[in-house]
Image 1 (cartoon, rainbow, N blue to C red):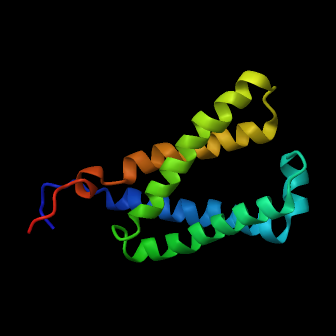
Image 2: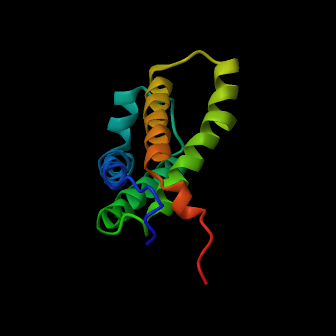
Length: 136
């Protein structure tokens, strides 16, 4: 690997650990204890199929992040996926919600968690490495 790429190895590992703990843990709660999670965070009523599907996606992210600890660059697409879907959520879901509804506690939790992922991913992802031309 050429030396002109700045790769923040510690940030990559921090984001993988953060994903294992937060996404994996929250996903497990969504799948195995949905009623407890809904009542604890004061979520509005949820469609159990959609809630469970999102929980499974979070568990899968947590599992893939375990592999990211071993091979940080190979699993950067996981961080890119998180960065994009959380950024899109801010624009397509949160912004219209804020314009028409009151802010509830569960929304504040999502804002904080999603913002921390976006900031962490922007720091950790080695964009110069990802978008560099391949040598033939």
